[in-house]
Image: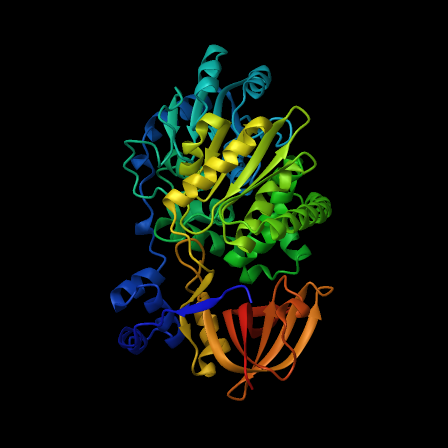
Length: 564
């Protein structure tokens, strides 16, 4: 058991009845009240795809200046460089702009810095390279908001710079032709939770202001949805509409590379949701950036050839397998260290032998396992550490890094995830300071507690029909979590190891109704349960589809054993 206690919030029964009587599916009605949506009007607005919730791109400060400069570049036949980032948000942002420029016959180049040798963000050597290649305008996507020195240098060598980003701003902004970021001071844009790809899409919308928004979303929405979900942005408000329309575009028509990647993962293209992107597409696309071969994913997203898509997908899946092996080894090493030290605050681990590319995903797993923020640092032969940071709970990671900025050579990101560069000599003091900041700002829970929406008393509520209706409330994610439910006094009929013993399949019975359950990343031995037991289960209900067959499946979050 991972949690010492369960807190069951329950739901507004009267509101759920009202919603149900209005024609809303009963399970959906209950779930919406758990998320604070209690009136028929609010529910119907929430469930709609009304594009009126998508904001005018010219509300973003400097958008008019950016559009003017790009149009001048197009008229003059200038070469435009797209400067991106090596994560999924950065790659989809880059490919979105590149797809747009390609459709207009514009001379462009995508530049993604190498994770291992260049690191995150704009660098001077890259600007020299782009200028030498004939670019006169550089547009950053998902990066650049802290590039003050680099912006000055760009101007000196004759490069105009347009910055589009969504990360936190420092006190001074770069001196560029335009700085487009919903988080910048003085920007009146209503949605500060746009992903980098969302900002890039807004730039295209502004350039195509006379084009139907629905058409633009059908063309570019797949990339917007993938980047926004992969970067764990909020899935409410405008982002919700962008993701829903993007998923619809992905289900109706998709790029050859995405089609092939989905086929390789045995995913039916008609049933893609946020989980498909978060657990299937994003990790595979991310593998290229993590392993220093970003061109692999860029080319896969941009190719129009089925044959090239097949070749690139094979290479990417092999690279992803290598990434998983590296990641597992480093996580096991970190896990063993932390079991002996029993962390009581943020985890800060550093090592000279760790692969820098997988630090972020290992940090996320450490944070989830130990219920504390995690910072994993890879140190190179020169004693320079590059770290990935993942928050946990309400801890504000970017603010914490700001409080330690005198110890850091560089940092950037947002409150949930960030990156840093630090001298090896400063790591111990950084560890002490970050823990001190944590204890000053966070009320530490005495024990990990699992918060659940409600207890399922009548298991017939979890019918295939009801869960199919629940799928229509997608997207789930940051700001709008999927339903976390529980059932008590469940009879455990069978326990079956799967995935080479890494995962466990359970078959349970409640009130004569049978349910298949999957417990990911926990072996049957770790669960500590045996057939014939009475147990309580906490779970997320989903519709599982495999080769055209759909059934109800419960994804186990936690198990409690009970006396028979």
